[in-house]
Length: 634
Ligand code: COA
Ligand code: AMP
Image 1 (cartoon, rainbow, N blue to C red):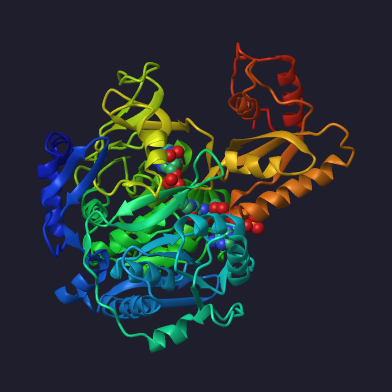
Image 2 (cartoon, rainbow, N blue to C red):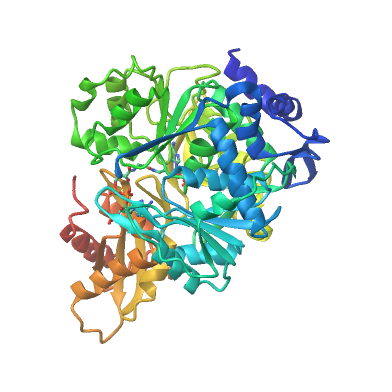
């Protein structure tokens, strides 16, 4: 048996022993009483009775061990022309000061702090400062509109919000402070205080009595020490798209999260302390939480914070410059980033100017959406290093399936996200909900208990946690993905079973977009589907039926719908295409056949569903989609 197989089998047959040993790599103020508390199935908790601090493990511990002079954070911002490095000793000081400032504002253990930040080091400092005093952070991605931010503020009810004057995208500066002000105006819960990083690219008007300047706060702050918290206490809430416009607040605990993430750096990524690790994502997503912030710092690595894009900042050689200039050993990004590079530079001419191997580049990991084999092969051919697709979700916090480079670097199978990672007992289920044999396509589920680091619950909604994830297949976690597992145990993740779509690796709910479209006064009903896109993987496509008597030009209505989605969900939704149709295809019981429309748009073979109300509608839909450039070989 190879080391992967040994670890995998033991993780399932003896989870207490396996994770108990792994947990020795973390500093505990008090050891746990039980590795796995299984006294209340289907709810499980890891390291019950243990006391520790995540910030101590990610920062102070390394300073104490002599890593104080090593870079902890390396910030590279081609969009502003800046770079900055922060050593572990400096990070300890900055984090302690911001933690002290939050404490001075009355933030204590268990209080929530919302962080709405661009990709600047202060975002990481804010997250770690919360962890330091046991406060629960909730980072909201900067590309979300005020309405989405307000929803999260209402649910998390933060005492303080940490934000910045602006974010900087390739072509424009996005003033964040007015967006934050709008969000607070929209929200019913009002935070007592905001702390604003004022960037030179945009001014921020501070509201007297509520808003404070970050630098002034830091200068006056008294550093705060790490506060010991229970392993089972929440570290953060991260909202993610569910099937409605109401996002799910994924709760991550402290102990299991630190144990699992530090271990993945060795076992999955094969990255040792001192190495430079780059997750080209955003702190607003789970990839950013786990692999820009926590895992690399828990492992004593240098983490890279990149404020730029794979292309256009300034060109398709941006990633190669980053790797060679900063001697990055491992890169983690979404396939869409590589599709963007490949589209602009198909022969990888930019790469010829750089020596990746000479810079110590070792591996590329891809996740966030399915890696199409063409892109994966292209990356392999040009990078001359392993390219590894792995499958995970906001809920799981780390990979459910991967090729574990640090355990056994077995050859990859194109189209598969690898074998289940240790701790994950994955299967596809049949129509009866029972585990199905190899090769069967069906919903992918994971046997409970899930390993440490996966979601503990939904913020103040244990009922919804249970209904969404645990009730559908008793004894299992419903992933919401469907696919199959082959004879050798390789997992193929093919599609979502719900209305979540993946746009450029960003997870979005078509249900949330439908809620926005349905609120337009001229719209009677609507449907939004994720259709294939060569760059972004999927993009949303809207079909709307207008109310009787509406005579306004359709083009005006569609333009308004596009603006509404941008203003209410955010530019990141990339909702740019919609059409007016006379009717939507439905079953006889009134369910809209979104899957059938998607197949027609993507020109996939599709049978006319037996339950369809009126098959003639499909021809009308096909004609409309053809006019939009879909429903034909592309
Ligand atoms: N703040 C404000 N606006 C943001 C934002 C942020 N943090 N991030 C994105 N946006 C805006 C963009 O400016 C863009 O607006 P536009 O419609 O006015 O152009 C819109 O949201 C969509 O952004 P994005 O998804 O980044 O698309 P893009 O067309 O600008 O770039 C790629 C395309 C492929 C280059 C880009 O999606 C990318 O780099 N993807 C990498 C994958 C990734 O990071 N995935 C995260 C999970 S691992
Ligand atoms: P998020 O919660 O934003 O990380 O998105 C999680 C979803 O992205 C998963 O449920 C999948 O639908 C999709 N996903 C992530 N990684 C992969 C992968 N390697 N292969 C296929 N789909 C993936």
